Length: 305
Length: 240
Image (cartoon, rainbow over all chains, first blue to last red; front, top):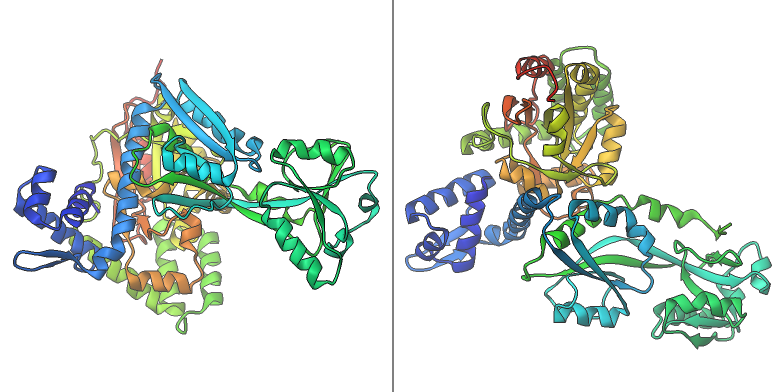
């Protein structure tokens, strides 16, 4: 496929009019028609149904449109990155992260971003998934990394990076800290330290109810970072990302028969021109090997010395 | 898939990977093995090559004498690597591969690993470019025994700019899915776009001094041609 053929295809798919598409692409109409025919021959199917006055995308044309658009956009982005690599231009980037996203996981990628754009100016904003959805809608953040957003706005483009695993954060003097393995039933009557609207708590309650065990009680904590301090004060058990660095005097462990995982996704907004830095960040996130993150899935107990 | 003998294919692939023979012979042996164990695959490959040849795919790829367009792509460890930086110290060979799953790419990469020392001795440096994300490029690198960088051309953006990107047909996709290849995971997209596995040998000035572009993915640049282009291509000394 030639880049020009795809450019003409995208223009025609948008305008559904050969004359207008040719004008928009600054080529003659026969040249545009020829290019579309060549592309159809290479793809092995008709992209458009040509009627006297009307032009329509065929089912095949509709089916290939997203992939050709994706490839075309990535070509433009690749050229822009090659042009701007190591250049000193100002590059502001606002990145929104959910509370549970461990920023340490991003440091190799942010290192590359800093190398690529020496004058990058990053603003990192933490928020709940609702706050992040709002920031994306309002255009306050170009890129977000978070669990699935509550907002189902169709302009949000989400791509999964990895599954974040959660476990319990326990004070070492707690009775559960002395068990070799912890099952859901062991949590009966315990008090949990949870963030508002915690989905894991609701699911865990359901499980205990099924087991006929007494319900969990809770403390509510809006800031993730406050959880370890409250666990230390023996106020309850935290629900905590197992990969996040935590304090040596606390113990993080999984519930044997109740795995808590959440997809971590990267979000951008369709149709909003992305800066080269934002696009590069998303591509680095998508290409990255997250196996190390997922590799912790077999781990039952974690200590930090 | 009824007319596919996976064990037979695996055996054939292993045999071709171990074979001490010129690359073209090893690739031909793989095709013959597939003809026996997965005849439908060979039929599809023939159709694809004929379709792309008729459409002139790859005709606009950089030619000898052209300057290779710049790229900045992440390697298999996530480090961004630019052609400009690579070209400062070495004559670069860029080898586009379809991915770790492709038997022909594995054989090609193995043939390149057997001459990697000679490439380096001649002041050259090879880079492999695939549309696959780091996890799969790492796997491919381990399989190939190559020391060099495996770069991710995400969504085939660079390949498209060189007229090397092709989209697979429904029949090809069905076959690949039946074979158990999860392209959406390999490439982190649903595009079903692959590069033509072309090879470019660059001089120190970044111009193409040798190339091989063929829409039939079962044909690859002969390693002796590659070494010859590398030796002929410009001044053997490094720039001051």
